[in-house]
Image: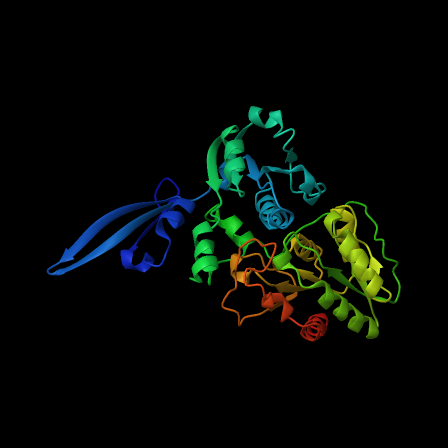
Length: 380
């Protein structure tokens, strides 16, 4: 380490031939210096690396930007908690879109919560503040414009690995095999920072569950998703629900405003089920989920909500894959996905229909296999 608090690393350039060099170095604030060591006919090229570490003891104010969506914002909570617990003097502000503000509404580790909306844009108060550090975990055109309007001494930007995701989706070249989960990658933006082991956070205030506490065994279903190709089929959910009902379980359906019709239809077909879908009341949904033995769900924001409540999850992965980093974080879980299909993943976000027209990634995940996995999860 030099006198400026930097780590100096010296090693052969061949050691980094498999690293996406420009992105990796930019992400970690690394500076390269090429040199040669010659010994008679043998010439080895070495790379001298200087990594600038974040000195949190010298920082007082941090602004973290993650505007959307629900799951992505929940995945920021380990970073916020770990920072505040390790450096209690830090004042951590957070900027997100207004519709997701419940994620941090009661979070004790936040100093001030700022919201963004298309109508009101960002709070004018932000432009009057100078932060010691801004951490942009969104890294898109909008967040770039926002951060440029706010004064700061230091800036860190999340590497979304867009090119690696493009290669995996379009050419099935997998450079993400050893990629960390997204919360860990958020922490890596700060270079030398490690998360604690406590998983996701969601603080619900004084909300009370809508589920009557009795001897019933509740299992949650969260069948919705923003994209069709990330949804296990409706009929499969209903068949699983009927099978579980016969085994003495009560199914509780969860969803937001866009899932209400789906949940209502399913509740009509699953005997004894309870429909607790609502108009995007995240905190009430979270409190209700907390009464369940487990939640069966798609790769969605409500999956991460269940994880934040420390409820075990059984998750279906269709058009997306775990290499993207959005798997359940440090929470009891089991995953169901079809490993045999060469067309997976067909997207890193989700699509409105199956490009191959067969939708085997979800249709071949049977209710019987889900039932067996769920029993394993409950007794795990």
